[in-house]
Length: 175
Image (spheres, rainbow, N blue to C red):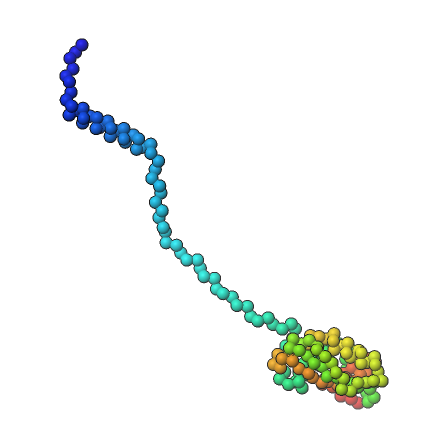
């Protein structure tokens, strides 16, 4: 057996320090990675959506710009002629008519008929009275009286024996 010199305690301490450091490094490699660092990136604000304001609802159907009941009567007569075209007597009316009636019609702001009132009712022709009232009601809604809000207008119905008619507002005259 060979003789090995005994190592000094300094050398053993130094050597053991390296061993411990190596073991520590080995275990450090096995450790879990450090938690990720939260990095805050600048956040772009969401684009602002423009506020869309809807226009007020338009009245259903036509609108009249009439400022007086007399002016509105033109719009109402044109509306009735448009709806009842085949029943309009074309040309000048004969001298003797089957019936003449004067009717007031009350219209609300949306053009709906509120009421009718006879000023001169053709009492000898009740069928004409009911037909005129029916035509007025079926023509609703009339042009909305936008500038007046509501209107009561008067028109004269000139009724031929054939069942055709003209309104005094748009009459072509009489022979």
